[in-house]
Length: 82
Image (cartoon, rainbow, N blue to C red; front, top):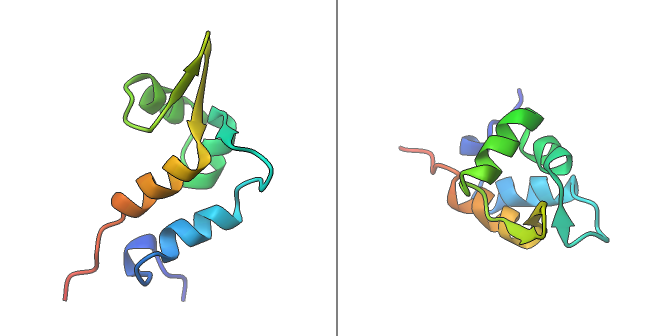
């Protein structure tokens, strides 16, 4: 049986996401973020524009810092209620 993020032990959601991230990159584009969090690219662009995700702006480029994304996942993972 497959576990959802809210059923995983504390820290496991971000750990699973970090396994999918490129090791050599510090900043991720929308396509990479979409793949990691399992959402569509358009939705990720909307979340980046609204700054719902942590972003870095470099001129016209908008990127998500890898470590901040992992923290965002951890903070937004609901704890399983007993």
